[in-house]
Length: 213
Image (cartoon, rainbow, N blue to C red; front, side):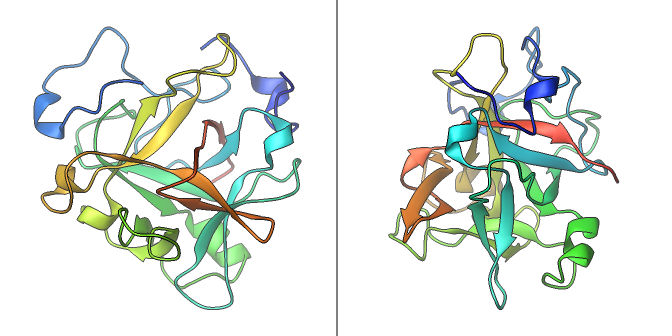
């Protein structure tokens, strides 16, 4: 395995069941989400890059388009970190992210300002996870705690390396009170060479790197 170029210096030791949020009543021995430096990922306020484990599979996640809403893709350049994002749990009293807890994924203010993206810090969403592209693509302009923007992180079921903690992002509409049952893996959907993030395709194995605020 060849780790992503921009994540490689930090990699250290590191599929939960798709349980509903109502069943998540107590922490397991270790149900925290970790970045590639082995630190717990902070709930809100701290930006992170989202990237693949292997450099042969593209760079970091970023938002692109000429108008809103923006589409989430994997940058084709392997050394590119992409945009930085905030992860905000619906459970406000948590300091760190936990597996299988509903959350919103929000473009950081710094990335939005630097790249001239849509105004405001909007959340990622999938309008219709059961549809075909473009309706099932991951886009911006979502709202916090809505069914279309209700995500969770779970451990990747078959990680590329046992020494690296990697994760899968899932959309779980019913965690926020509406939509189809079950969860949908955030995957890569390739169209004309562009790796879009969508609810169908190849499940995207991801890791996190802390970004500057």
